[in-house]
Length: 118
Length: 113
Image (cartoon, rainbow over all chains, first blue to last red; front, side, top):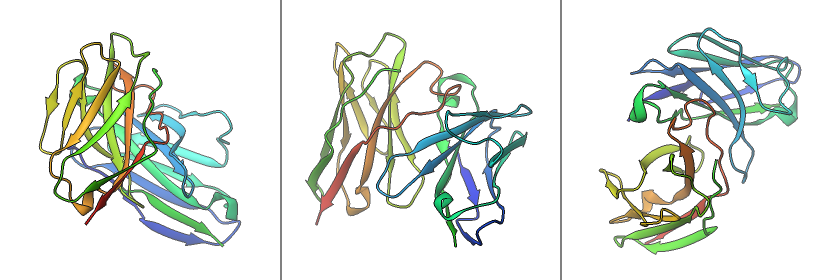
């Protein structure tokens, strides 16, 4: 299947600082990327959808000014958690699709990034 | 998107076939059945998808009933590495390309040695 890579795999940051997570589609052009958050023992929750070159669409309850998403190219999207607080500690996962044809519409996920805010 | 129902957990002996059921009685004609799994502390992994015909790939087989109201994911020879949460998701033709995936609680499959 297609490969989606996230970096970093884990990060620890101090409360009040910002942290950026990158998501790259390695072998296809991702017209649409999605960002999820997963707390321990819970399912994945969609945070936002981003189309290349457009502003991201955020799910209800997700603060767009806190979780900045940039999808400037067809292979890269970034999630920046601004002014991070301990309650932002979570597993953040990106996914991507090329949106072309049925197989191309399959959504592939990155490995996830663990964020711990201390 | 149609709602799916899966058992919360299942056990299977290593080397045996693991059969994971999914009910999707409200599925509509243009909706596909997708299966993903999430191994602990990793991102979800695509397994297989289908519309109405049975499908098979290198990972698994997908059996969809004739009325399409339920399906079964089959891992033919389960290994310990197949221990994961398995998600059955019903999506329209776009495959979630526009709207993303909505994850339920899935089935926690535990492979026993």
